[in-house]
Length: 581
Ligand SMILES: Nc1ncnc2c1ncn2[C@@H]1O[C@H](COP(=O)(O)OP(=O)(O)OP(=O)(O)O)[C@@H](O)[C@H]1O
Ligand SMILES: [Mg+2]
Image (tube, rainbow, N blue to C red):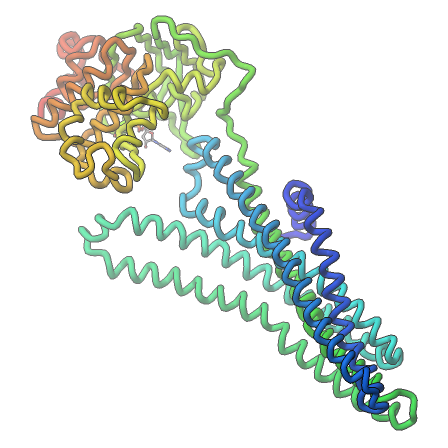
């Protein structure tokens, strides 16, 4: 990552998230000064300890100095503890805010924005990347303050004890800085790789879990294990790489310290002999120098923390900056449903990153309260037409009107409130039957829910479930049969009670008894509602007031079942091959 980009992200992180905790940071800054002061006090106390206790053998000092040493350590420990507590709280508060914002951004993003990335990648952003920001805020910020102050105070003490030696020690510092800088760059690159791999791993795990049944049927356990081993192994390597670079600073710093101490002892030998320095100054200086080792090492690696935190923030900000094209404009008026007429005028649509239009020049008028059926080969564009109505996507060309109001000129919430959708792939949450149905109307009474289930012909099977309405149905309703899932989703749509119904009939066929139940449920759902149905069942098609035959994205024929049987070859074909089967 470029330095300017890093700076931009860090300043955004600061101004938008960290700044409001400036009081807490100031508190930990004060506590850091206490830590620094007491660390230096420990080193300084060795000076009077040697002079007063060992050389002069002062009785009072023999008690006072050990007490002072205990107090210094206690002061350091307490101050450090509270500084950490304060910043850990700030860090997790920022994690909370960021995660909430990522969640909100995901919830308001467009369908196609979300689908351009694997869901595993979002998991990685919300956990891993936010975690790196947390590291920076809670550990990084404290280390910068505490270690800088400690270092300053210790160096001051060293100068106080003997400026010549201190000057000599200071010469070594720029060396450490150079080492740190080169390591920072390398760790940055490795971290980037590790983050990509982490996102890949999350994506893979999501697929592996979702595909468990398919994996078993194709007996691809070994294949998948090999695949996962590969990803896990790559992760291991990169994890090692980052960790190794991080600790590479240690041996170099150890060596530098060793050289410093050796040179320093060598030099002090002369000075003590010539009476230029006392033994007491020597020990105090030595202690200060030893204690300076930890903050130097920590500061040498601080740029890695900053880099990782900045890079994590960058990826999180990218999600936060997703600007939905299809969004709620509060300035718009609400959709007013009168009869529920629907009109498509010259509507064309191209999926992002594809060349051919999925639907072309669609012109249809559907009278309020009537049922329009769409039939056509797989991939003809039936689901696409239906998905345009609740604005999952906006048409590339043309207009869609409901009761003469263009759907892009009314609020999204009023539009979607008036449309119920029972989709081809039923989506249910891992929750109770009741909660899944009540999702359509959160404050629905028990009577309302049960009535909806009655209309959806779902009451019988729900009563037979282990805990009736309170039965947990598992991930995406895995504990229900296909027909049961359909009826739960129909009950949910019935409860929503909206004037427009979009129905993408499931292609999977059910046994005739369940089939009849689902059909009855659908009849109840669509009664007196403007209904757009993608029909695979003959019974649905015959019941429709008007049928549109789609081929390669175009409407090629319209009419009733009987008219189409006479006039449309494609319809005749579809009918004889699929529908009557
Ligand atoms: N998200 C998408 N991105 C890109 N292309 C898509 C996407 N969804 C569908 N398509 C393409 O658009 C065309 C129409 O798809 P659509 O889902 O509307 O077909 P359909 O008539 O509903 O078929 P089926 O009866 O199989 O459900 C297809 O060629 C398909 O490949
Ligand atoms: Mg479809």
